[in-house]
Image (cartoon, rainbow, N blue to C red; front, side):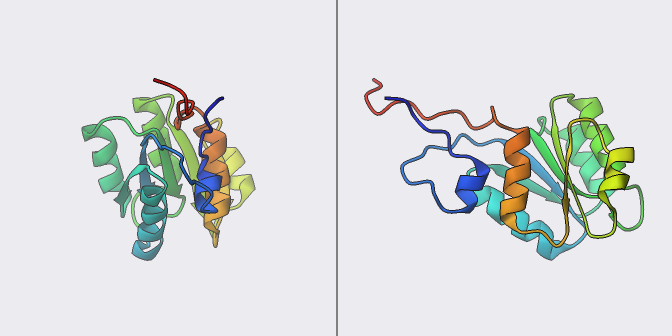
Length: 153
């Protein structure tokens, strides 16, 4: 008998009975506190260790001073300062394996294709958590390992 790996999409749908989740670190960068809180709450409920940064300066500090993040969920337009594209580039410079999901209500997939880091994903705002979960699943498939078989000792 093999175990099952709960994906972020299954977690968002509440289909996690009996699943054990291994936490991964995710930095959420969004200048809208309501969105930052909603995304962090979803990720924390899904078993991840999320941290919110309200602007580029805080994001840069957290990326440089803490253990590496497995993924970054970043708004493209962060108000004053640099863009989410810049934050993601630094995250990748510090750790090439960092998954990146861009979210934006103002930028298009064309902007993401031109300025986004390779292998990243884009989710348009307003988004639902299932769309974010699907994007994260594509990036961090190996982050949440399968639970051991029921007969494992």
